Length: 398
Ligand SMILES: [Zn+2]
Ligand SMILES: [Zn+2]
Image (cartoon, rainbow, N blue to C red):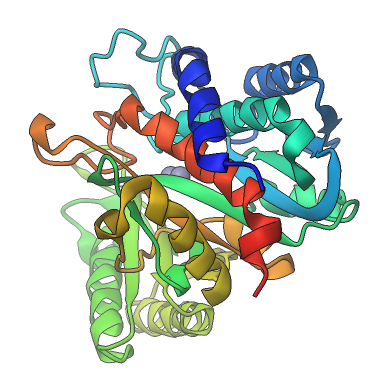
């Protein structure tokens, strides 16, 4: 059996500088969900230059890479997401976004570069590798319906069929740590668009109108009550309206307000239940106040559930790399992640990779324009992903 620890750490050491360059290049040229043309071309070219078999999806910018080890063995899939967010960067980094209003604020530039680096390491160690590595670079994680579904529909999990799939996500835990729990780790999310339909008029004659701003105010407050009165306090759930738009000027009562928001719950059945309850509440209030409504919603991402055995495998791989004390557990989040679709087809796990330097001040959360994960996490990300492939034949089987 090869001494993977030494072999991998040597290759990671040699490749880290190159991977950081890729990360900065991706960071300078972010692309929002569904528009990852340049990123996917960069990924495909890099994999092809390594001599890895490249596949391109037709219906989205998904890219796959297949590396065949010299010896027979299982197929381990590794997934990275590639998209950025519509935000104006405020990190002040020298490699800050050069695209106005678009920014890698969720660390997907780190995920993509780490996975490319992992592919390079594994290609160098191909002669010793038993089994295959399948690299899944997916677009559009941040925007429903997500890029994973399209890739699965195109058959990226069919030939070869992976035995297992892993992914990582940058996190505000300290550098040198990972966090993982078995079972639900990221909740289910539904997105909604709600129109409150009133009847406009003069500000001084509200009795002749149906003021949609007043109706909306009642709706928002009633929905907050719904979240505390209809949900078991022990079941995690969240409703947030990230956008409300209505009216044109101060002395006119408008005729419509538009709200957009998300409902998240750790359990997808609760998420669906809450959408039904939400509609009942909206219907009751608008009817009572003489207004109308139009509601559109998409049941977005299912709950991301880590396979317990594969979670234990991730922990076992991490032990010799960072020490048991640096393998943390975490609370689940309700943010939504379309890696969950891959996990519905193939067992596997997602872990959080610490990218925060506590000496730099309090952590800044992802989706914040000042979010800048520390690049010193990149080598550990590459080591983890490489070991998850290299060790699977020996240690990964339950
Ligand atoms: Zn995100
Ligand atoms: Zn993300």
